[in-house]
Amino acid sequence: MEETTNPETPLCFDLPKLLKRGGTATIQIDWDLEEVSTTYSQAHHLGGELRAEASGDKVVVSGELNLGWSGPCRRCLETTRGVDELAVSEIYETDSTDGETFEIPLNQILDLRPMLQELMLLALPLTPLCSYDCRGPIPEEYPARSPGSQGTEQDIDPPIDPRWEALGALTFEQKEDT
Image (cartoon, rainbow, N blue to C red; front, side, top):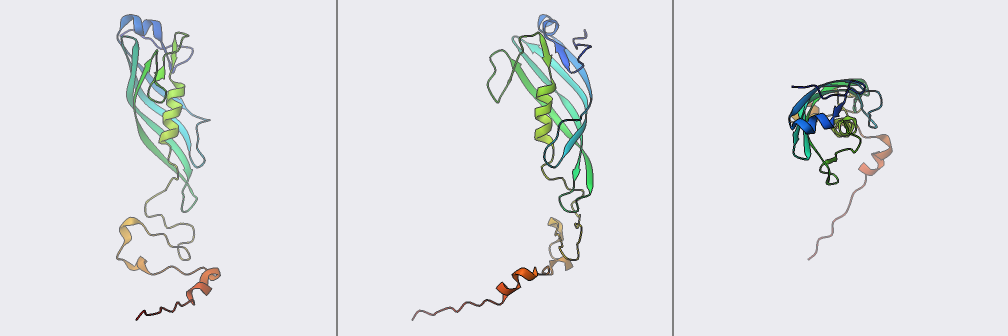
């Protein structure tokens, strides 16, 4: 297999070589990230292997990547880290369909960075959680129940916020229709 990656830009394929041969090429991804983030999580590293296959006027890019991320836990606000697996299966073609396939560039170099950034943004957790049994910063005052804790001692009603206590004294009279 002949090398078709561009040495100046390691996340790029040389399209003329790839399309001319009508074959496949692989690229090792080892990308330390700095600018890919959402409101609550940030990507740090993307690693793995991608394979590009030329088929007529299309290029199919596929593979498995690992995305390392960090962000504040939604309950305790401590920084939590994780690694998620990204399954990549994207098609590049000359007459792309918006939102379904990517356009083959006219400059003879297929840059994977925009596609990978899009996939990473979709894979980052919206609200990270350090563990499913995280009890939060003040569990005595504001207990958090995990899905598996039903039927245990944690079913005790949490304390009522003093600002809402007056609502507990309200009673409603029901009229009986005869």
